[in-house]
Image (cartoon, rainbow, N blue to C red):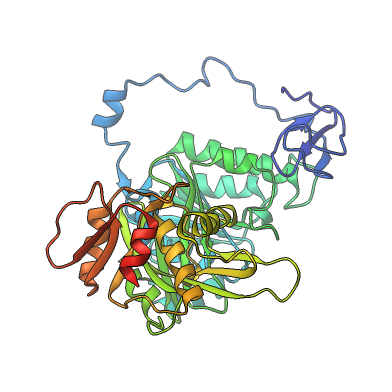
Length: 448
């Protein structure tokens, strides 16, 4: 919808769509009370002429000139999630709860980048950033610091400094003089986001933008901000815990399945090179209801612990509570347990937990979840040297999964001796015994 200068329009803070009149419920995303009025500036509109239009380039010339080369951030886990590093002109949006380490990670990347960086911090003074740099051991010879929060002034500083990279901490503190709202308002986020995008794409400057998240866990402001940028990253974890997980929910230049694992220390964010050992470090292998599952996060296999607990229902309706797993899929798996395996758990409370803040979205975790629930129900432990994997169908069949060789290789590297796997699609791998099963019932009998 085209904007009419000087005429009030209404923006949805959830989906970013605009409307000519106010609605109690957004017609697009159906959320209530998310429309706010916004008056576009009457002056300063950019007019596009033929002279302003960007030149047409041949794809072969762009590749030959090296404009698609990536620049390493110096942090392996961050490079993994980005798809190999930062591309020239790319805009990355980094979100997370307060205190999770967004500014720390962005500053460490800025200090390690091979090029000059302008660090725009409207939330901290230069002295505070200097103390952080001293704690991290960063010399900061290539980093320029500014505490400016007016975009027009920032744009002049970018023109003067001509940096290769910019870091904005945070987008909610930046405002444009052409807007008539306070920093952090919907109209300001929309306006500043577009101007940052214009500067980066026209000047070949790469940007890392830090954004606060709402109580729902999404980046504050219109979703249009996420549509504008090239990559959206979320830094997850508990601020009271030392470990952090970095995920990409959008990436135009790479996969969104990769996972970066960090540990917050006094010297900054340290990349965890062996996440499997971290997730299994405190495992109680003698307890029932504990299963190890080799998860695939992009191209990397990570061994995680899946826990289950079956208890007598204290109230009339049994509970089904999960952490890190899909509740509806758990309901399906418990139905398979009852119908195909004959294990009565309908009147019991079922709790499933994926340790370490991990989320399991792949069907390959079905067999591990079923085995954990069955182990807790029988109160019999699963062998500590065994891993389980496989998709379970409604008929109770165990279906083949992707990347099984890499999963088995990681399990073998960490000392596991046995693996319950689907009967089809498995290749031989020395050093680990493969227990091939056609059904979930057959797998349950094998492990007990």
